[in-house]
Image (cartoon, rainbow, N blue to C red; front, side, top):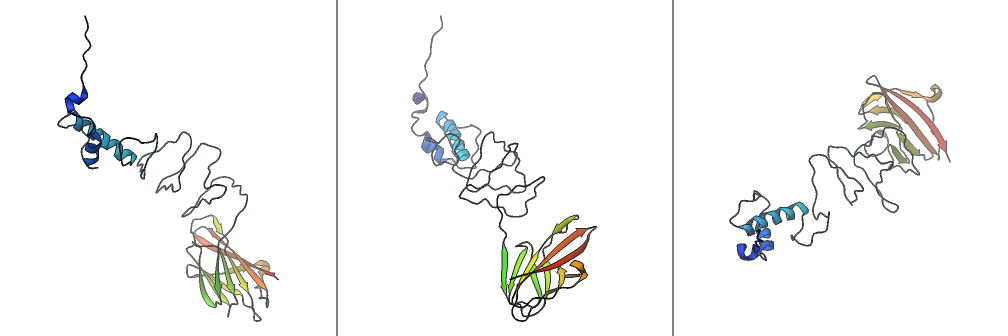
Length: 242
């Protein structure tokens, strides 16, 4: 005849009410091997381990799937449904999705990237804005940092400008198109020469004619920096507005 035997945990440990405090006293570097002097110590190790996983300040009352601290994943992280957060950083890895749409930001917020973004395939944009770097005056060699922007605006240049484009990507079979806008005074100036990272380049002007600036107008100098065969070819043109 079988007999049911009941073991009271409080009789073994003396009390289970101290597990919470026991868990709090275990440091993050403590071994979680389960070797402890009694059941209270064993459960304390487990409770402390759960606290370290979730980042919570207490063992009890943790919301399902909720983490109260940064989550670091050294391997792969697979998300079945959604991942949301105010700051999601991926260092040295990839974000991939099999979904049709990857949402970054929202209707009233702006998603941002630091560094280059490479997109294979078509890109559809509802609207786009570009950063512009303004300056006043300008003459001689002026450096334009293409890691900051590709549109540069010079108000009332005091002499012809040699545009030194810096931090230009050197991957072959690529084209980058910087623009220099000169807001002219009564004495017009032009972008008369181009350098790429201080190395002088030949400007192949549209129709083979070096343009002349236009007094009191907006002259827009557009350049195509073509990288092919580890060498540069520079195309240039000027349009006048106003």
